[in-house]
Image (cartoon, rainbow, N blue to C red; front, side):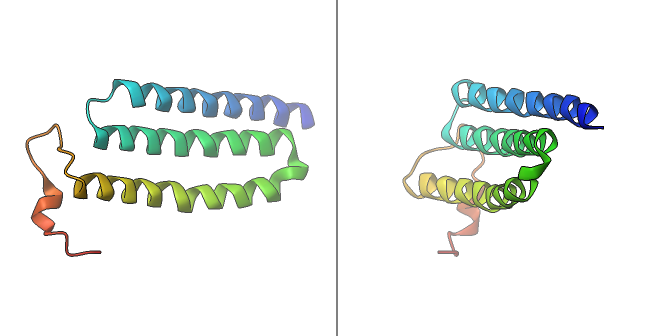
Length: 110
């Protein structure tokens, strides 16, 4: 059973590092700030979660600690990307696309 968990954990760990690599590549390939934030956040969040799950499968004794890290990442990554995007918008960084849906909101939320 332990060998099967090790093989499965290694596969999930590999998928996590692949998503982290693709997220890093997305930071260079995306055309503007907002799509870079999106690529960096979504891919790295999924990559980090898969990496943590893979490590938990390989080392079951660490599962509780890795789960706590997983919960922390799930709360902080999306929130930080939202604030980065809001700060970039308030700084006047333009979208590459022609529509600006945040301007329609009127920046009501502080």
